[in-house]
Length: 136
Picture 1 (cartoon, helix red, strand yellow):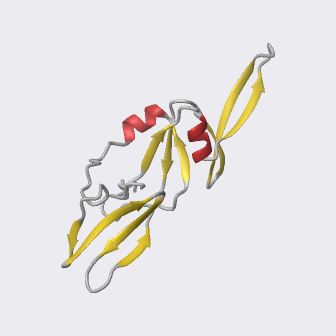
Picture 2 (tube, one colour):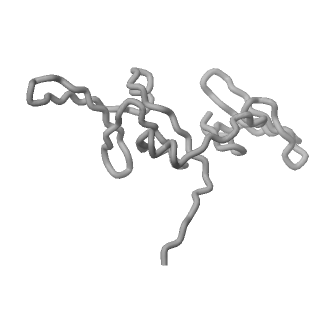
Picture 3 (cartoon, helix red, strand yellow):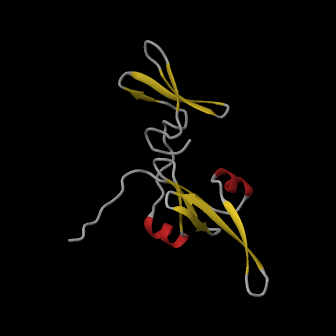
C-alpha cells in the first residue's frame, strides 16, 4: 500500500543564474560541448551525493540539512515548494528569551555567533538559525 510522507525540515534554495559568485559558492563545474554544427554550448554541473548533476540557468540549488546540494528544475520547484516567512526575530539580531536566558545573534565580520547570557556568556559559531533553519 502506498503512503504519502511530508518532509518537515526547511530547505534553502537559491536560483541558479550562472554568475561567477554562485559558481564559486556552490563549486559549479563548467563544460563546453559542441553540437554537429561546431556551435559551442556551456553546460553547468553541481556535485551532489549521487554524483555530478546537470544544472541550467533558472534551476534552483537546494541545500539540505547536512549542507549537501542538488538541483531542482524550476517547474518542479514551483509545484513542490513554498516560501516560508523570513522575518525570524532570532536570526535578524533582535534576540529571544530562552528559559530565562537572553540569547542573541552577533555577527563579527564573517563569523556568526550565538551569545547566551546568564551567569556566564557562551559563544559558539553557527551556520543555520536554530529557530527558522535559515542559512546565515
